Length: 390
View (cartoon, rainbow, N blue to C red):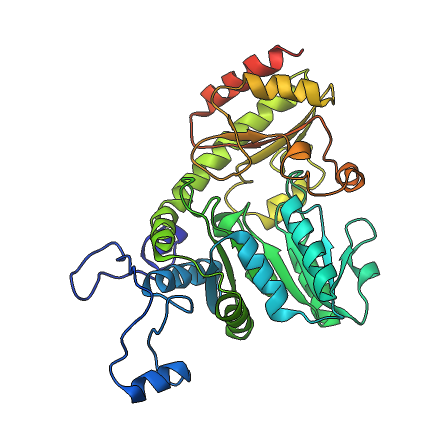
């Protein structure tokens, strides 16, 4: 299978050998019979294939992991109950007290809060290298470099091949959160990144009805993360959710094309409206990293758009948001429904005001997750909301 659209449908899934069911069955069970003591001992020792307990592995979840490993070009993948559980398991599975983690921001506020709080508790130093640059922040203790393929919420990019090369020369593991791009637009492992992470809750599920996370990479790294995140912490994904993600991913390439089309139309409109001071969308020629986006992203520039109002005040942002009809105010993203939020008071309220200011998360910033509705209708909705404050 060569094409992503084909692999999104077929990878990791086969008709059920017992019933012939095309949809992967939901194996709603906690334990699995292994027949004999000898076979059970072999499974627990890792010397024989088989399932033992759904906290460690489940056939429905395994099908999802196989599909995502294929789409990301990875040797292995492990699924979790949320994106945060996936992120936590990467830290706890691969870092030790005294290690340093360097990140290139801005990051999703919840991720930065997680890194700093776990780091402080477990003796891991967390360093923000966004302004000084990656090379300036690496030390002999640096063990991990963390980056988002499109930063949340201001949609900045980093040259992943360059990040991977610098980190590899230093002996550090690289982690790229690919939630905003999905493998439809970017495969970080192909750029030399070691691990790719997803909040599957977003574009992979696509319908706002399941919460999950995933990490993909080499067998060795994923094995350590699985052992810690599932075996010790217990952040496993339930089979019902795995079934929903398997269903959602089948239409991922088609949905992402619609998201990208709508976001491009919305960004062009916003860039022309007098009530808008700036638009953050890498598909616009005026974006400072447009050339990098053209080189690094394939098939589109994503479904996320952020913009700053000319009147950068929370009260004005509230007026605009509260007038929207097709954009539901919610903090998630990647749904077929269009969503809008005010990052300073929601997704990035976890970080300090100083950090928000440094990363461009102003009181006048609004983040849009453009759904699959017709672009003309979305533009009309934004027009009536913005006209009211101009």
